[in-house]
Structures are given as structure tokens and as C-alpha cells.
Length: 502
Image 1: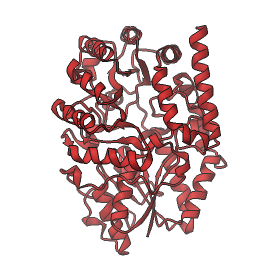
Image 2: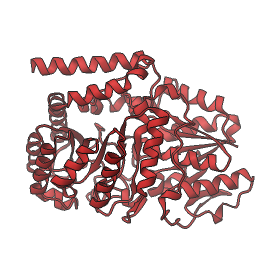
Image 3: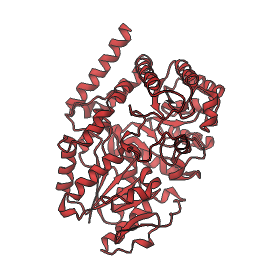
Image 4: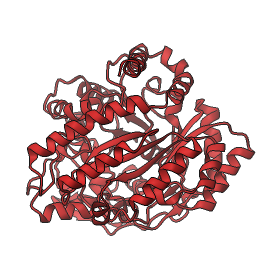
């Protein structure tokens, strides 16, 4: 039996290049290989080596290019769909697994349509990820979807493959699975979360299609924990992982870093935990291991402003941390309370000053467009953005993802239609408008003004030393990718030009 695991295209269809290793599929690929099933990972977001895409984080362009994505969904002759068709046809899988975030729902359907057009429609399609987990009945009701793996997928996917490998169809016994039988939709009881994360196999980074498309540093993303105890109203993570936090052992983390560094040449890592510094003592232990074992890596993480202090930041810096992403979202105390962010403006400002003192480059997440926002709230957010000197800004438009509290709020206010077009639901969608007290025209003006300002600010405050360090590490791979190399050089030249003349 052969399995093909696919990450659907989204940014690529908008004209933006995103080269990264899909970590979740890596875990599933490792599970399949453990069973003796041949499996491969295909990241359809990762561009061809000569593909001419924009590799800069330009928010104004990303928002305005949303129509490119929706147009591509209706263009069966688009080169990306042709590539996907060729990959599936040449690999001859028995099962195609697709990881699906809300923004990629329509893209995943397009891939499933391609899958069912091959080999007489006998290839099985398995969906997993946040959207199928939360909107299970809608997804399993799609004729193109055979199975849905709910929540944490490794054990459920393993049992499903075992059943398919045996040629049996006793799917009712598999916890965390939704399927169809004789036209009837079945949703099995939920599966308990994996308590010991170290029992999971290390993500498979070997069995990737088009390995030449990746940089060495592409393989440095990993997790050290699963789960988030917080209740942020715009986030649906608790619907996937629950609020219970489970930690990997530190020995396991260090071993994975060593393997990635030695096997793939990556010297740059990113910990994709919801809040890396959740357990301060544990972070200190990880940092001390990195220092004492002289691993000489650079790394970044995402965390909250109320989970930082001067001492831990200095230790993180010493251990190689060269990037921190912090969630701020709003400059309005009122909105922070409504969306249950559970932080204050005072805490935000104190954390930013501490990060700057530690000399760690940082990025601040901001979002506008919450259902209860007023123009005054948005202007307060803009004012706080302006105070983020020394760091870059990640700008998002509020998106009511299913499974989040703010989705229910937007629905209660009548801001979500009965028939939802999921292809418009993303952080940089020009169609996003879920504010009850601001007109659509006024809100679009805010989005245009803010995104242009953020792009200008990020050009000014981007840490060029860090950028060149990353480019140097990627140089051997860039030589083999002239298209990407050209656009990255063009981006660097553009940054210097704007710094000199703005």
C-alpha cells in the first residue's frame, strides 16, 4: 500500500512563495513508515526551483492578491493543479491524506476532485487538521471525502491504515474517525490525547517529494509541547488539542535538534509551540542544554507577553534565540477583555521593553476587525503598532474560525452567512468583514491604510543582520534555485533602496 500526504496550496496560488516543511504530515508519514507502508510527503505550497513568486512579507499585496487564489480555484488549467495531477498520477497512491486549515478548504476539495479523477476514483481520500475536526459533518458529507481523522491524528491514522492494509472495513472501532458506510455518515467517539509525546516517532523529513525545493533551514521547525491553557476568543486551538498541555522530554528535543542539524545541515530552528515559554523552568533547562552542549544553533519561538521576564530572555538570547513572536492583537483594553486575551496594555509595553533590552529581534501580532470593535478601538491598535519600534509587525484581519468563541459572536450578530464560502476565510483575505459597527467601506480603508503602513514599518525595522545570516546559511541551496535567488536578492535590494530614500 502507498500513501501520499499533501499540504494544499494557498499562498502559492496567491503568488507568494512559502518554503517550509509540513511538520504535522511528517508525524503521519513516520507513523505510516512504522507500519511498513510506503509514504511520501508532498507540500504543494512549496514552489518549483525556477518559479517566479514574491518571497517578501508584503501584507498589502497579500490582501489584494486574494482574488488570485479564488480565480485559481476555478481554473483547472492552472499550472499548480496540473503539477498536483502529475504527482498523484505518477506516484500511484492507494491513499491520499490531506491536511486542511479553513483557508485551504476549497483547495483541498480541488485536490480531492483530482484524486477521484485518477485510477477510476478508487484512491481513498483522508482529511485531517483543524477544519475537518471542527466541521466534521460538513466535511464527511462531501462526496469527494472518504474519511476524516479528528483532532490529534497519529494513532487514528495508524489504525485506519492498518484496516485498509488488511482490506477490511471495520471502521466503527477506530476512535477519532468519521466515515461513510452505505451512504450513511458515521462519526466515531473521540480519541484520548497521547499523554506521552515521546512515544510518537520523530517526524519523517526523508520521504519528501521534490527535496531540491527545500532549504536546509526548512527542516528546522519542530514542537516541544502540545496544547494551550488559554481561552483567546479568536483561536480554535483548544478544539484540537484541548486546554491540557503535554510536554516532550528535553532529551527527546535535544536529540531531534542534533539529528536535524547533522542530517540536513540546518542551523536555524523554530519551535512551533503555541506558547514556548509556558513553563519557565523547562525553558531554562532547554536553554542550558543548548549552551552546555554547544549546539551553536539559532532559534525562534512564539509566546505571550505575560510569560516573559528579563532573566529568561537573557538566557534565551545566550542559548541562540534570535527571534520571538508575541501575540498582542489589539491596542484597546476593552477589546482585549472581550476576546479573552487576558493581558493588559501595561503588560504588553513592559514585555516589549524587556525584549528590546535583551536585543532579541521580535515580531508583534496585531489584528483588526473583531465583531465588537469600534473606530476608536482600531485607532488605539494603530497607535500601539506605532510604539513597536525596533520590531516588525504581523498584520492580520480578524477571521472567525469555526470552533472559536468569536465565531459564535460573529454568528450571533448575523455577520456570518448561512452558506459560508470558506475560501474567503483567511487572515489576509480582502473579503473579510465581520464588524458590526463599522461600514464595509470604512473597514476596507482601515485595512488598506494599516497594511501599507505595516509594510513600510517592517522595511525600516527589519533586522538586516539576521536576514543576511539566514541568506548565508541558505546560500548552497540558493545556487541551485536561480528563480528564488533572484527574487530574494531583489527583495534585499528593495529594502536597502527604501531605507536610503524613505
